[in-house]
Structures are given as C-alpha cells and as structure tokens.
Length: 83
Image (cartoon, rainbow, N blue to C red; front, side, top):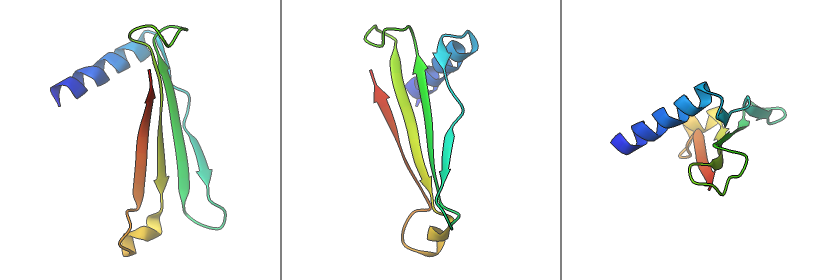
C-alpha cells in the first residue's frame, strides 16, 4: 500500500506540473437504461512512452445500478497500463 500511495502521489505531482495528460472521462449511457460505460485515459512522462517513467493507461468501468438486486456486481472495472 505504501508503494501504491507514493506512485499515486508521483502521478498527481506530474499532472500538477504539466508532465501528464488526463482528459475528461468519456461516459457512454446505454440507451433506454441507467447503465453506463466510462473510459478515463491518461498519459504521463514524455512524448516517447518507451522511456522510463512514461506510460499510457486507462481505467474502464461499467455501472449497472439494477444489479444491486442480483448476484452480479453493480460496478466493474479494469485499469489498463501500457508501458
């Protein structure tokens, strides 16, 4: 957990000094329902992702509020990291 906290602190510092890009999340509403798919991309480091300390990633989640009454999770997601 300590390593995770420090990694997140580094990412926030990079964002604050302009060394990271975090566009607004994109949310797709499933027609005729309350269900959602959200994609949250980000990039940190230089223009060359192959360099140490540079990465591309995205968090992708689904939200299905009606699943609370079923055996299925209402929120599911994955974090993709491309280094």
